[in-house]
Image (cartoon, rainbow, N blue to C red; front, side, top):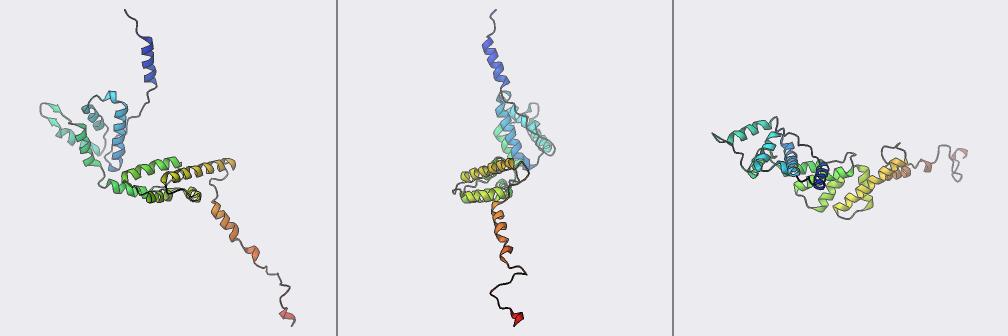
Length: 237
């Protein structure tokens, strides 16, 4: 009896142990606002575990299983429509299934909705990288390619202290240059917080600080007890 190939077995075991693990997607609740992410999560999960989905029927069943709440009504109607008497359920092709899902749950004006979200997007003290990721997603959904408009929207959504200093760097008319400027400014803020021992939650706005310094002109005004030595003493005339 031949002994098993230990090297092959060990290699397979190590490969399996180091294979990334992906959490299963959340169940879709039927809200169109959550549809696109749910669909993408399902497709990515099946792609990562392609050995578990040998055919389209299995893939469709997986997505149907991950439906809940308001989406259950659509699931029931879909399964009834694809049930053939005496032959069971024939779910059809993945292409037709996804088209049916899009028709039922994709927002009516997906591009307009993404444009609204792009205009409303704000950094809100989050890491610049996270803000940039969301900005790119919405910009892609909108199909916006005008560089000047992209830069305007990106700058508008940044935290004010980062935006002001990024402007002072004077990036070129290039979105990536603005992203790099924002990241550099974020790093400066982080280092200043460390230097200040965390006592300041935010770096003071340098421009405003200068304005406050120069707008306090009280020292130029004469005091009440000040007398001009060259002025005529009217009281003694």
